[in-house]
Image (tube, rainbow, N blue to C red; front, side):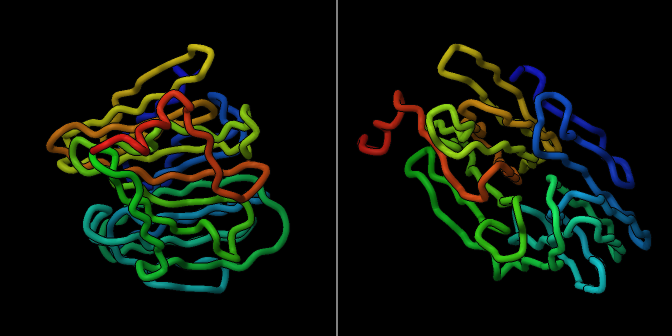
Length: 262
């Protein structure tokens, strides 16, 4: 059911589950929020799952297997992403020089793989849409040679703009590759909100008011996002499915917007 797809978990130190595969319609994805206080360390490891950790803010060091890298990001609205890939069964340790917040998204995967880091210069910036549905989409781990199944990136809505628009889906019901997705939101200023709509051609529909720190699972259906005037909206997105391929099917009722005057 699309109604049971909003997750709101208080921010507290440590590693905290946000949503998990096998519950609320999730077949592929599990998400955690990682908060590490200055001077502390937190560990993460999962057998049979690969994961990507996307730094939201803070400075410190991350060790994945026998690789170690420095991490720094002032915030999602000021700096491009830094993210790391954690192969199945490999331990990650995050040590914070300043307070760190990050999101980890995981999906089942098999076989050996190599840890990897994506730094700000590795992020591919795409400008999508026009007019009031113009936005930036940042590919982090999408077409890289490291990750087996996950695709991860970030989208930035200016105030009053829409994204995932024209409404699109990737649930396979119209022949497109089937992908499950999850969004993790931030707002600027943080007291703001956005709207996440999910709907299907057969009439199922729900709209969530999303706040800073919320997550929404997108198990199927179209899923446009809007930000209100005065508030920038960000979401980290992660997808997994049978194919590691970005593909979408736009709602035919709304494709005309591509050719409409602005």
